[in-house]
Each structure stands twice: as C-alpha cells, then as structure tokens.
Amino acid sequence: MNTTTKKPTDPAEEPNVEETAAEEETAKAEEAAAEEAAAETAEETGETEPSAGSEPDEAPSELDGLQKELEASQDRYLRLMAEYDNFRKRSAREKDSIYSDARAASYTELIPVLDNFERAFQNPDVSPEDFRKGVKMTEKQLRDVFEKAGVEAFGEPGDAFDPNIHNAVMHVEDEELGDNVIAEVFQKGYKMGDRILRHAMVKVAN
Image (cartoon, rainbow, N blue to C red; front, side, top):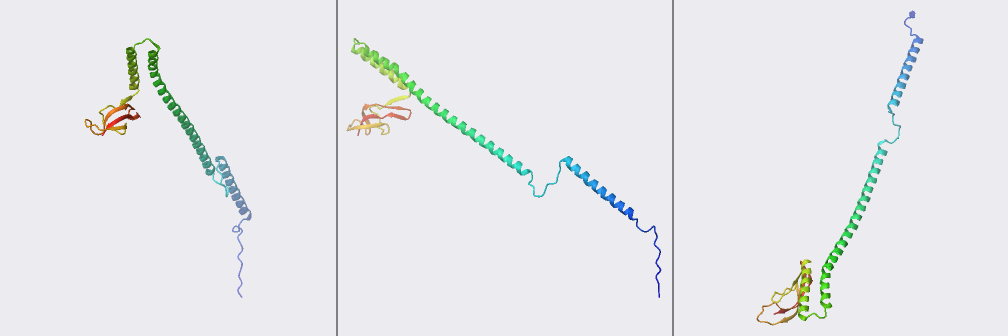
C-alpha cells in the first residue's frame, strides 16, 4: 500500500490576505478619485452628457431664426405697401394738377380776346369800318391763341376728301373738279396733333 507524503507548505509562498485587501482598496480609491476629477473638469468646461430623450439645442435656435426672418419680411411688405399707396396718391394729385393747370392756362390766354370783344361793343359811335377792323384783329388774336396751344384749322376748297377728317354733308356734280375733291367748306375742322377736335363739314364733288 502506497502512501503519499504531504509536503509541508512554505509560509513564504502562501498569499497574504491583508496585502491583497489593501491593494484592492487602493485601486478602488484611485478609480473613485479619477472619476471625481473627470466630473469636476466637465463641470468647469460646461460639457455635460445629454440626457436620454432630450432635444438638441439647435432646434429652438433654428425656430427663433425663422420667426425673426418672418417678422422682418412682414415689416418689409408693410413698408412697401405704404410707399406704393403714397406714390399712387401723389401721382393722382399730380395728374389732377396738370389737367387743372392746362385748363387755367387756356382760359388765361382767352381772357384778352374776350376783353377786345367787350371794347368793340362799348363804343356806340364806332364806324362800321372801324368795327370790322376791330373784329378782324380780335379774330387774329384768337387764332394766335389756338396756334400757341397747338390747335390747327383744316378744310379748304380743292383739298382731297378724307372721310377720317372730313364730314361730307352734300355732293355735287362738277366737271371742273375731280372725284372726291372738296367743292365747298361749310365749317372748318380743327385738330391738335393727330387728334381731331372737330371734323370739317364740306361739299364733295363726285
């Protein structure tokens, strides 16, 4: 029968329980100190880990920016509408003023003509010849007013008939005149530039 002899244990080779526990405590203390230092550093720099489910800060900032841009656009639109309304009213006033000024200028030119007509009838002892001369001078003065305003008379015997500017109220057979030639003018026409103020009333030869 074989028997195994148990070798005595060397005390130096057995682990020291107290030293192992001390090393574990030291490691835990160092780990806790490292975590505390990292937390303090993050707090000083303002860096914190976002909590789960929290929205990023960029979304509220973007919404505020869009709101400000919308308000600025509305302000520009209101300013533009106000400026347009002022322009429209100013243009209307200027248009009315131009029309009123033109009428006033025309009547101002006609007042001296009316004065001459009144003088011609105020002298009962004027001779027929002098009266005729006065009327002719007044007529010339009136024509000068029309010419200054750009108003021209048209319609003379011998002119070619033009239905755009002449109004034929009579027709006559005349071998000496060609077809569509004005034989007689009953009433002259007047125009201002290309605008016909009154058609000439004429007799036309066939």
